[in-house]
Length: 285
Image (cartoon, rainbow, N blue to C red; front, side, top):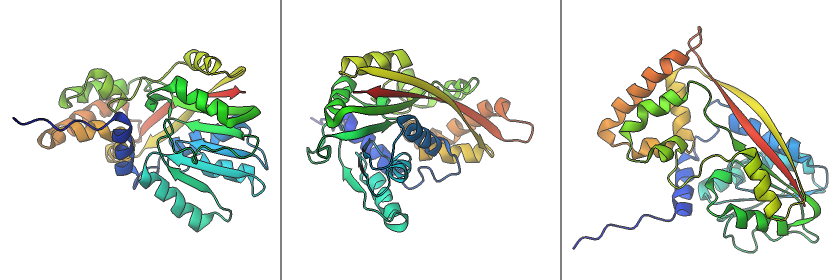
């Protein structure tokens, strides 16, 4: 009897997804993730000489701004589950960064102890940019971040809000082409959780032992030149998980349905304006 091959655990699937996206991630001319990374560092108020852990560092959207803010007296450590993402960080650091950066490949929910080992006294700050929706055990993970911080240290989190008005029509138009549930299609990654609300993040952080939580939100704007530019961006992000799930012979029809749904969103000059809300929480130990 044929037995189906078990699906890999969610953590491995997410790591593999970002491995496949790494080559084009943040390289298609859309500044949303780098802008959110810079804002995360600003809200965390990283200062000269501080020791920072960037958990889920990706290709360095917040890691490099944090390294610039901490300077050579400080230190920055990055960890990510995707080896390809970490390789991009290491390449950029070798080409552009004059000071050593520590980087580790690992599941930040179940890392090698060395990867999250804090400096004497603990980290001054932990950054976790756009990772909340991917955490399988956010309560446990935030407790781990809490224990890695020195007294008075802070954890800075960021996450995206819902799709902008009108863009949910693209999700609706393409939903019939993929095998996932409506929730999985909307989120893009099987196993990914819905975006949290600011208040739920506050409650999660307080339950993990943090004493105080500051909440912020920012509106970040981007513009796709045309549907082809949007299509390239889709494949450079976690949303590629949905498009990979569409049977190959149905992919042209799915893309055509998406482009029909994009048509009403075009500006007079033919571009596609895209404005997302980014949420931030700074949790004080």
